[in-house]
Image (cartoon, one colour):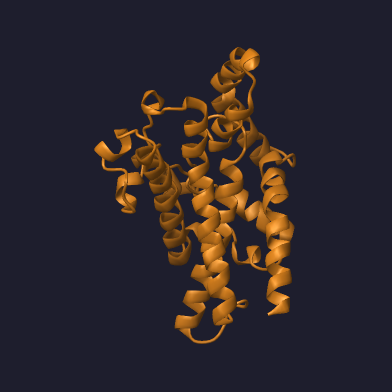
Length: 239
C-alpha cells in the first residue's frame, strides 16, 4: 500500500529544507497540473513494481486483477482519490499479494515490498538526470520550459518523499514488510502483534504531525532524503 499524496508531509519537508528542489512545493500545489501528473506517475510505477515483482516471483494474483500495468486508473482507490482532490491527502489501491505462491516467503515478500520504494528512487534519479542534462535546476524561461522544469522537480521531490514515507517500518507501509526479513523467528509473534497495531500507530503519527509541532513523519522523511539531496546538489555544482 502507498499513501499516494502525503501533501502535508511533502510541504512540511519543503518548508524545513527551503531550497532546491523541495521549495517548488507549496500548500495547494496538489491542485497544480504538474503535481497531479507527478503523483499519477509515482503511484502507477510504484504499484506496477509491486505487481510485477510479485508476478515474477510466482504470484499471479495481481496480474489476474489487471494490476501489472502503468495505467493509473487501475491503481486509484475511489475514496483515496476523492480525499486527495479535497484535502491533498489520499492513497492508492493496495496490490493484492498471496505469499503462498512464493518459494521463500519472507525473502520474496520483502522483495515485493521493496520494489515500490525502489521504483520511486529510480524515477527520482531519472528526473534529476534530466534536470541536470537540460539545465533546468531553476524554474524559468519559456512557458514550456517552466512546465517541464516544474514537472521534473515535482517528480523528483514526490518520488523521494513517497520512497522515504513507505520505508517507514510501520504497517501497512512497505518498510514493515522489508524489516520482516530480518526479524528472528523467536520474535515472530511480537512482530505480528506490532504489525496488527501498525495502522493505528500510523494514524497517530499523522494526527500528531497535523495537530502539534512534533512531526515525526516529516523528520523521518528528512532523515532519509536529505543525504540524497546533498549528493544531488554536489553533483549539480560539479557539472
